[in-house]
Length: 267
Image 1 (tube, rainbow, N blue to C red):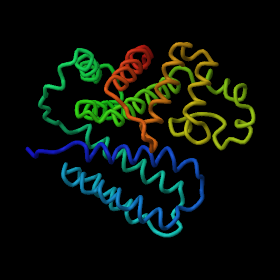
Image 2 (image 1 turned 180 degrees about the vertical axis):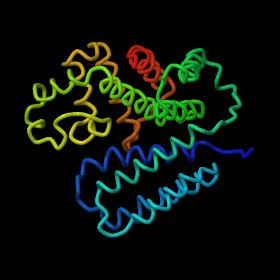
Image 3 (image 1 turned 180 degrees about the horizontal axis):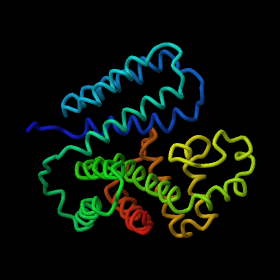
Image 4 (image 1 turned 120 degrees about the vertical axis):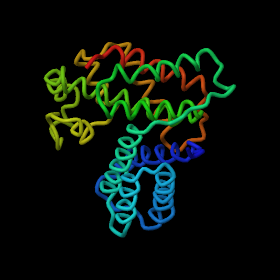
């Protein structure tokens, strides 16, 4: 068994999540050559090294495709897609792997043990393989004190869970609320009717999705507040920032999202 330091993989996941979040804001414009060379290429090369260390063969191949795509005239939309495809490949392969974890003295705080157990017990309560992958990454990050990444992955799990709950149980209510809550955006939308998980991200921001859920009565006011706080914390963790994320902040955010949203909203 290799002695692997998880921080490298955590940094890769955070980079990919940031790229997905930021690239979509720039539409179809082209990525600057200098920015591509100095920022994205080194990070994708590092992602490939980390995937090789963990023997994630599919992810290594996906990294090669990503590197090949980093050429002149690459659009922000394509960059976002490359980051998304690589993140999804890593998540899928990680979901099929088992890792040994050796507790340390730093794991003795009661609240830390509670959050660890909350995450550890969750796989049997979420039905989707993608949710299990998000969960596995959140647990790895939390146990290795990568609290920014733990919050990012817990938010990904929670938002994915909420969207699939809407698709399965509340789609009519959500679509009916769209033109009521955001008429101007709805009139110009490329996907004015939500049909798939991917449709949520075509025109809508995550904040708008949870706002519409509150307005349509899909979630409670308290759940909306928890989701809004969780999204704000995710944005702080995922975007470049000097703000420190402490273990207490991570514990509170993760506990709130899992206990009051994921476990309360049953798919």
